[in-house]
Image (tube, rainbow, N blue to C red; front, side):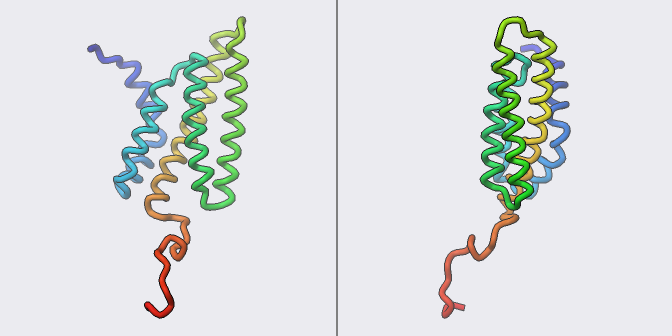
Length: 153
């Protein structure tokens, strides 16, 4: 099997922005590695400019945004998740319009670039949130601990 150097270079360019954050999160919480790897594999499987690839990427990103919304520790994280969801809806709508005859390759490339930017932003936040959740950051300890009776202290 021949090595596709262009694919390797493109994958490295995609992973580059969040690689340091991912390595740090995985060092501190090795148990999150499998989840991050699964999500990365889902994202890299369909990263072309074809409308079907863009829609598949949007579907994966929606799952990640749903996780981020559920795991939000504060109002800022909730607002970001809502904004990402809105941007994904706009991209999905644009992708559906690009299935019509007469659309150009440049239009599909522009949409793929927008989705690639979202992919980097969302996946970086997903990795960070996985690390925070594994460490219990943002959780209220007394709610996470087993209930105790006052006379046990």
